[in-house]
Length: 179
Image 1 (tube, rainbow, N blue to C red):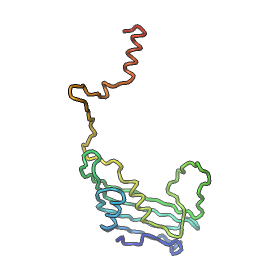
Image 2 (cartoon, one colour):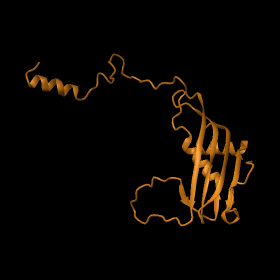
Image 3 (tube, rainbow, N blue to C red):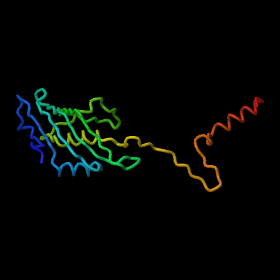
Image 4 (cartoon, helix red, strand yellow):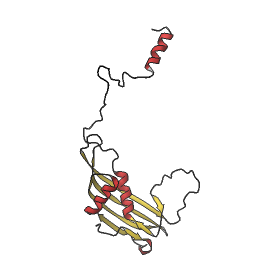
């Protein structure tokens, strides 16, 4: 289990000082997160940060996330170990206003969210981890080659032999009398 609670009631938080947060995920939590995010293994996961009042009614969570993730290479399926080091910052806004229009632009500030009765630090950690995990991990030296298929006795098509506009260029030259 993590060594601090992961959900904080806003009413119970001290407004004059920050609340230190140290999280070292145990094997069960790492296994649960690995299954959730479709990776083979999360070897390590830790977070060190603080939760503090921001103004009179808002809160900020800041800290550093460290994790070691193992996932299969997208080409060779060999295990790829990735070390993740991410700074985490979230701002919980008490007077949050959701846009009323059906079409809105995404704000540049993607670290702000509405403040509820509780602040779930584990949700912020899990979100940050999920965004940092490589989508297409590759083992060192793994390259995506080209597969060329054709029936026996037929020359296979490839990038050089199939150029849809090359024939048009040759035809234009012939029509212009240049060839």
